Length: 324
Image (cartoon, rainbow, N blue to C red; front, side, top):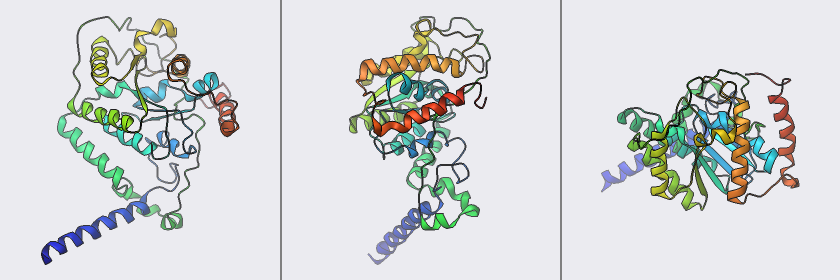
């Protein structure tokens, strides 16, 4: 019994050390200078949004932050949204990114961009990645341990200041143009490209999380001719039907979107540029306004900062703004 007590005591002390060191090593501001990873900085901009002010949260990979511009949906419909996407985001990362955002937000809708369904890696690598992300979520010291040389007095005082707001709301502006020349890519078929079990496992957890929080979930496929085809559409549609989750595949609506593949992609059909994103975001904003009864906040004084940020957004994407 005494030996058992020592074991419990050891693990209890170890757990306390992990918790305390996590508080110490976590960045205290949502900036790269304070230790946020470049890959996470746009997605973590959601931490600066006032609590319970977002109608929509988007998770997904780089297709999401290249195609969905929250400020377009704000300008057209007064919808407040944020894109919590990362380059190459896996479904496990989407789950924990969403879970973190929901600590301070209670959106009406979560959008899961479906390109992340098809990031293929071997099962062992995915399992290792999942364990890594789980440990980093619960004990951030595993993610930020290399900050030890940069610790400041603020870190020791454990004073957080996630106030660096992002007027782009997670969207990546790009003026680059590289045409897609591959022709029609959504040729109807009965084929199905299978999903990895790890993808369905973590997507199931996203579905469950949204239902527990009473948040609507919408699967969205943004236009991406280099990455998408009908076999992928069929598989995602099967998943959506099985789990009773709505699915909007914009790859089926390129004519309605008036996509011009000579000018709407920045890299030959993989990602959209701002021209393409504007078309997708206008369509998506209208769809959300029509199907989800989201409140138009444009005249609400509580959201006056969004109107100010819209002005800066329009400067950023204009010829006067920084090009990328």
